[in-house]
Length: 370
Image (cartoon, rainbow, N blue to C red):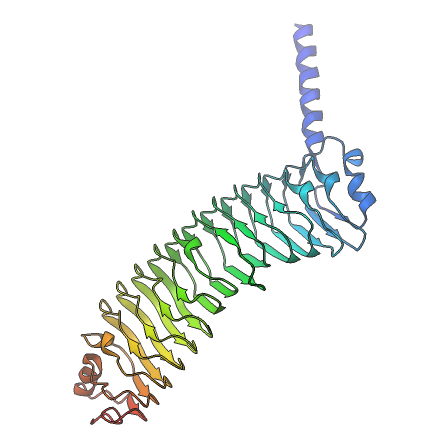
């Protein structure tokens, strides 16, 4: 019996020591020099999990190889080091309980987080230049994802949900590939700007809990988003100098609002054949060569309608069917538009809605009476 108790005691002691060896730093550690990084394994032998947060900063850290034994960090990871060129020492991480923030200059190697499965907080990545950004096994991010960089490749093909917002910004026009092929939902806003040629990378996205903004992109035909059904906020397609047509939203049925503004080369608005409800406003304005508005054949509910300052607009027949408009209508400063007697306008005139303004259009659409 004594031998059994002794053996059990030795087992428990060994097990306890093993647990103690695996976990370290309950609150925070900040690395400010390469020596601190290099000496981590000797200062914390056997430590694979930092329970607290990790900070990496200063101008004398060049790589993180000394942290390669780590598999989990319970708190935040903040990297703010312009001299850092290689972060492959973090490739063994499987979970980050808090947020991952990386603000660096130029990386000489590909960013590979092959083993990372979850980030509890947000992911904020801002790097001047790097080859590729690979998170192939990342499945969930509890808060927002902000990617402000220009990699040759974005690999997030296992990511299914983002608990906050998603922001993508590219600063150059070099070729790239992007894969968000499992992403089904973003709970917050989605903002996309910069040198993006298409949006096929979002072919599985079904729902956006906030707004979706696409601005200053280099795509000529706005494609992608083929599975997107609802946007709770406003869909804004604004300030794009090269977009000529919109075909991206074939299955969208609901949006909180729709702005199509100041797109210099957009000649035709179409591509919304399934859209049934725009809860607030539809605003199509300032599109310099826009000629026709079609492709809203399923639209039945709309908060308000604003069509103005589209110099060459001649045809708005895509809205010529019964649409319940809740508030107001403004059609103005479209000098080539000679027919604005579409069904919802006539209906609101019949109902004597005082919030209808029709002016400064072409002959036949200059006043409500016309």
